[in-house]
Amino acid sequence: MSKERLYLFDTTLRDGAQTTGVDFSLEDKRRIATLLDDLGLDYVEGGYPGANDTDTEFFKSKPAFRTARFTAFGMIKRAGRSAANDPGLNALLNSAADSICLVAKSWDYHVRVALGISNEENLAGIAESIRAVVASGREAMLDCEHFFDGYKGNRAYALAVAKTALDAGARWVVLCDTNGGTLPHEVERIVGEVATHVPGGNLGIHTHNDTDNAVANTLAAVRQGCRQIQGTLNGLGERCGNANMTSIIPTLLLKKDFAERFETGITPERLRTLTHASRVLDELLNEAPNRHAPYVGDSAFATKAGIHASAILKDPETYEHVPPEVVGNQRRLLVSKQAGRSNVMASLETLGLSVDKDDPRVQSLLDEVKSRESSGYAYESAEASFELLARRHLARVPHYFSVDSFRVMVERRHNASGDLVTASEATVKVYVNGDQDPLWSVGEGNGPINALDRALRKDLGRYQKHIESIELVDYKVRILTGGTEAVTRVLVETLDHATGKRWLTVGVSPNIIDASFEALIDSINYKLLTDGATGD
Image 1 (spheres, rainbow, N blue to C red):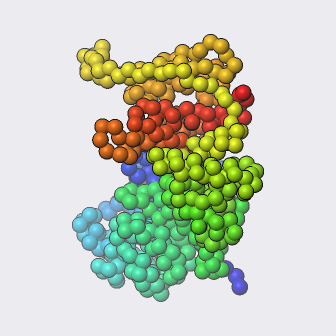
Image 2: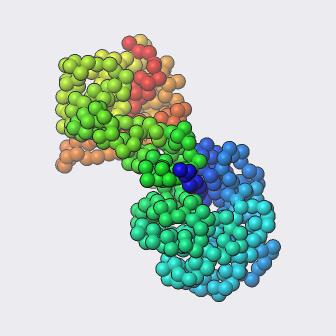
Image 3: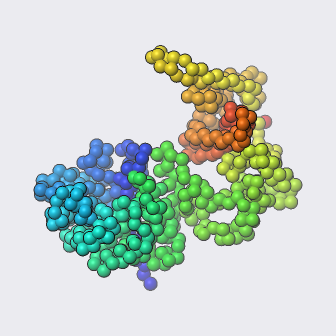
């Protein structure tokens, strides 16, 4: 039995650019476009040529895609103008795009209120614009904006918009849940009804996540006939985001109900790059990855309950719905006060430490973890600190350096402009392994921890080359007990710009500076250890 083809249409470079805090540069767009093409997507929508300088420049030449169609987005012609005399439409037609996706109102309420024209004028504009795209030799498609709200408000007109685009030559008619408020049972019913008027092979679906149902709505639409799927990598998009391609793609390929009926351009080899693609996008945006993201998050295949870990070691299918490696992720059996020997053994195996399960050091390590967590440590997140603890417990961590002392000063003063500012300065005295003379370093920062971090990483002698590419990118503080002598836990996340790898370390102390410094030292020691630096 032959499978039906689904076409994946990515809008990260347009819808994703509407995410709060996201502003793609031209180079960002080029890198992300290549990333999406490498993943095997059928369409990469690059933006809106003519709307801004970045998108206009991006569409001057076609990227060297292997499989994806380079797609431009824009509006149908304005009312009162011909297609030939509409600057916006002509910017699309003059671009290097393979396909052009136009957007038009499909809710008569918006036609009347937002556009201020008649329903007939809107339909005529759609037909003329689609015909202009087809005449240019490009693949034409129409995003029916607010389709589901429009269908519920005026079914006949929403259908007329869809059929007008199809009759004018549109390859795809895309049903958009622009406000993101439609629920899966509504999507399934409406798409099923529309498919009796517009062939499913010409229908697309575009959903937003305002009720946290964008992926569910997309899958419901596929079940009822839509064969083009629009979404964004990591679910980027305005407000609550768009349908998340990093969830949709593996579901289509790995879940029986879809995998047996449909095929996409994503091969198993390309699917294994999904987690990498997700994290590269986060890195470009300088965003911390969503640890709890389905399929690609650090916690997607993480288990810290001892009973669960024991079962997973016997057969991963007991607690995993798909193997993590098929999406490029990995299994993580965490060590915590809820863990058992199975967690410890699995973690040691992951670290490449071969220890017999009856070795008394396994139980003593578990006892130490539980004791330390009772005093405030948390190792299920700070896996780098756990690795150092485990290796030290097994006497397998070289000694690289020791901090003899440190001092932090915070001063509030007026700067040269007369503004009142707070400045932090830190001094550290470090002995590098094998050196008789100490290294003194001073660092300034926008806070005491930042100053300490800069001072510590300023000069580590022979080890400096190993730490030049790392940066503290996240810092979290949690107060564990009340009162003025509260115990503080600090989690530090470090990024290695040379490899893209991130790791977390933990420190605990009644003094927030001591807790932070402990986590910082663990972070540097972890980097030296993983680099294979030599010590005593």
